[in-house]
Amino acid sequence: MSARSELVNAWLEPRAEEMTDFLARLVAEPTENPPGVGLGRCARLLAEEMRRLGLEPELIEITGPHTLEEPSIVRGSAGAGARLLYFHGHYDVVPVQNRGQFTLRRQDGRLIGRGTADMKGGIVSMLYGAAAAKDLGLIRDGRIVIHLVPDEETGSVAGAGHLRDHGLIDPSALAMVTGEPSGGTIWNAARGAISLKVGFEGREAHVGQATFGTNTFAHMVHVARPLLAYAEEMAGRPTGHPMDPADPKGSMVVVGGLCGGGSNFNVVPADAWFTVDGRFNPEEDLDTELDRMTTIIRDAAAEAGAKVTIEVTQFQPPAGTPADHPAGLALARCVGEVRDRPATFEMCGGILETRWYDQLGIPAFGFGAGRLDVSHGPHEYVDERELFRVAAVYALYAAELLG
Image 1 (cartoon, rainbow, N blue to C red):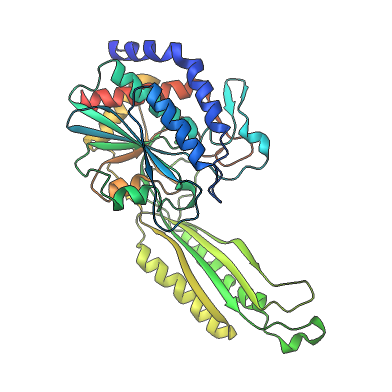
Image 2 (cartoon, helix red, strand yellow):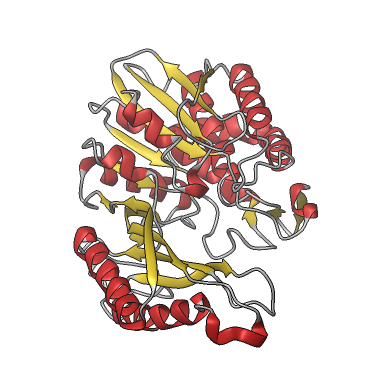
C-alpha cells in the first residue's frame, strides 16, 4: 500500500460508523420512482451532510414538465482550481417489494436495504471520498464537482438532462465517474435505450354480442408476436465489448413489461396497450432499430385491421470511453492500488448517466461498490467493506487527476 493510500485509509477508518449511519438515513428516505416521491426531503438531507463535510452544497430546482415531487439537483464542490473532475449519482430508487426495505439491516458484513447498491451506497462513498481528498490536500490545483440527481430510474431527462440543457456540465472536465453498482469493475461503456408504448383503439360490446365489438386484446397479441421474434433476433447479435461472463451479450428487448386495457371481464375491450423496452449494444444504430420496430408494429396492425398508436417514451444513445484513455488508466491504477489486484473494464448491461457527459466529450465511467445482480431486488445490499474501499478509490482518483 502506498503512503497516499495509507493516508486516505487513516482518514476513512474512524468514519466507518459515520458512513454507515448516513447510509441508513438515506435508505430511510422513501424516494421511490416511479412515482417520484420524497425527493425534496432526501435532497435536503444530502445537502445537510455535504455541508457538514465541507462540500459547499446548493439545491438547484428542476423546472419544466415532470411529475416528480420537489425535485432538486444537489450540487456540491471541493477545491477551487481550474482542473475539474465530476462525481455523479442519483438518489431516487425503484419501488420496494415491502416497506421493510426502507430500514437498513446489517448482516454478515452486508448493509441490506433499498438503494444500498443502486445507488445511495455509491453516494456515501463519493461524498466521503471527496471529503477525504479535500481534507488531505490531495486536490491541489483542481476541484471536484458533485452532481446528485433525482430521476435516473425513469429516464433521467429531468435531472441529468437538466444539467446538460442548462449548461451546468463543463465540457473541459477531465473525467466523470458515477457510483453505479459495477461490482468493483470499471464500466467504460453502456448500452443505448429505446422504450415504446403501443396503444390500440377498438369498440366495446357486451360479451353476449361480442361480434359487434372490436377486440383490442386480439390486436395487441397479433402485434406482439412479431416483436417477440424481433427480440429473439436482437438477443442473438452479440457485442464486441467485454462484459461480465454471466451477462447476455446480445441486445435485450422486453415486450410487454407493462400492459393493460379493457373495462371488465365480460366486455369486449375497446382499448389495450403494452410497452416495448430495449437495451441496445453500441454496435447497433438506434435510428435504424426504432424504424424497424415501428415498421413491424404498423405492418402487423395493418394485417389485423387494427388502429394503433406508437409513443416513443425513451430514446437514449449508448456511451463509451476507450479503456486505454488516460482517464480510464488512471482510474484503473487507483482501483488496483486499493483492491490489490488489476482492475477490469466491462460494458454495463443497461444504460448509464455517463451518456450525458460522454455526449460532451468527457471521459465517463461507472464504478461502485454495489452489485447489479442484487439491485432492484428484495434483498438488495452492499458489502460494508467495499463501501469504504470505493470511497478510497474516489479520493485517490481525485488525487491522480487533480493533484
